Amino acid sequence: MSQRDELLKSIWHAFTALDVDKSGKVSKSQLKVLSHNLCTVMKIPHDPVALEEHFKDDDEGPVSNQGYMPYLNKFILDKATNNFDRQDFDWMCWTLCSRKNLDQANLLISNEDAFKIWCIFNFLSEDSYPPVIVTEEIEYFLRKLTEAMGGSWVEERFEDYKLHMLSQQQQQSINVWQLITLVGSGHFSKGMDRQTLSMGIHELHQELILDVLKQGYMMKKGHKRKNWTERWFTLKPNSISYYVSEDQSEKKGDIMLDEHCSVEPLADKDGKKCLFFIRSSQKSFEINASDKKKKQEWIQAIQTCLNLMRAGRPAPHRESRHKRREMRLKQKADQEELQTRMKELQTANEAKQHELEDMRKALDEAAANAAEEERRRLQTQADLQDRYRVDLEREKMVRQQMEEQVAQKSTELEQYLQKVREMEDMYRQLEDALEDERRARQDEETVRKLQARLLEEEAAKRAELEQIHLRQQQAISETEAEKQELHKERLAKDNALRDAMTQLQQLELDRQGVLEQYQTVMKKLEDATNNTKSWKHKVAEHEGFMRLIQPGSKGHQMITNWGPAAFSDAELSLREKKWQEMKNQETPAQ
Image 1: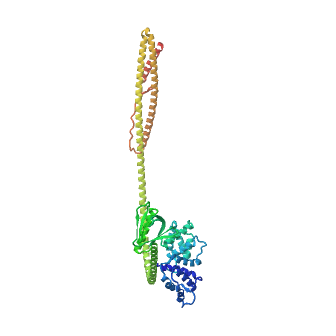
Image 2: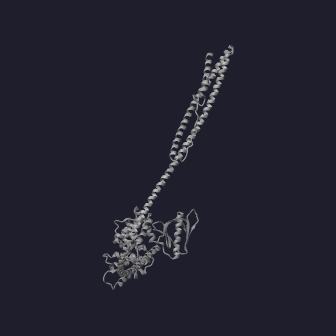
Image 3: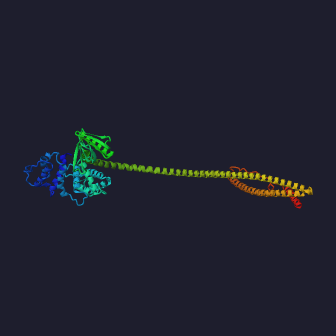
């Protein structure tokens, strides 16, 4: 979009503000004032007679916008140069139109912020009148504003706004006053204070309208005194300006950028870090950024400006706006082409409809003929179906019989398998019973060996006692002179006898313990034998699949008070008599 197109949008707002009764026309006196103000801010010599000369043939009263455009182009815009302040021009047009259209009662923004939004609207609006901004540009503006405020973009909120705008206003675009109301209402800046919103609008105005690509504080080295001074730098596509402070009230100089300029980093020196060097056709500048990140950002931004300048391309935001407009124009052309194509398809569709109607009539006649043929075919089919039904029922009966036979065989097989599983369980239980019986016999053999050992020890002790008793009797039968000495010896042997009797009693207790163990083992053996007999009976009932191995019979054992198989009754009586006699002999001797 050229500079003339941008100026015409501001002038259009001023012209429509003078149209009080909204008839589309403005009186000549008001146009004289507007023309004079335009010439003043654009620094063009004003010729008041030229307006009268231009409209001398039109004395019917107010002049429309179309009637004013030839005069505006010839006597004002054709003479315009770039030596005027664009901000003063926009402010003059804003002053005329804001008084009539802006109501700041319910807005969160100041008049200056509203003016900046008005300028951004003129930059982003379509090249048509009355100017409007489409939803794509609204989203671009609101997204940039949210980023400038440091917030996060909420896509759902904007989609809801688009649906509301489409349902309530039946359109996908708004005018400048609706945009100012939208931003001033705070709908898309919830959670932000007025100062943050104002700073975001200011930053966006600096970028889109004043072409400020980057700005911030940095240190600059002087050319004469070689001292370092903090300055506020603003980068534009063709220059870098630096000021005393952020309010830009006192400008200290410019660094003009051209295709011969260059920017490069510098090594640390003079206690300064993050240095870079700007070489222009006139001077060279040493700049010190606050940190490495800022240094890299400034170098990259300046290099981008130089590359765009060498390629003859505009600022990134202007190029982006141009691409978006070209895309919209292309989409519009595609849509128009699609509508034309749809009309052609609709015409061809109507012709096809007539052809189909004729074909339908022919098909109706053919359908009547086919219906009769179908009736005959259905009759034949019904006969075949009856025949097939009979065959099917016969086949079902055969199949049912086969299924019953299969079910019976399956039942028999299941019963056979159940018997096999029962036999396997019985076999495992029988093996467990035989194992218990084997262990019981081993325990019995162990107890028997222990009992035999104890009886042998008891017999040895008894033989020793008998020898002692015989020696004692022999000593008594000797001389009376040795009686006293033998008496002492007898006392010693009595003590030994008592000790032996004590050991004998202990052996008796041990024998009783062994006997109890033997009885326990016999009980286990009897239980095992009973279990074996019960399993033998069960196996016999199952057609004799196996034969049991039974333990052998045992002969009659002698049982005495010393245990089984120790002495016979006669031997026991003889030993008891001898022991009693020896005891009686010892008593008189004492």
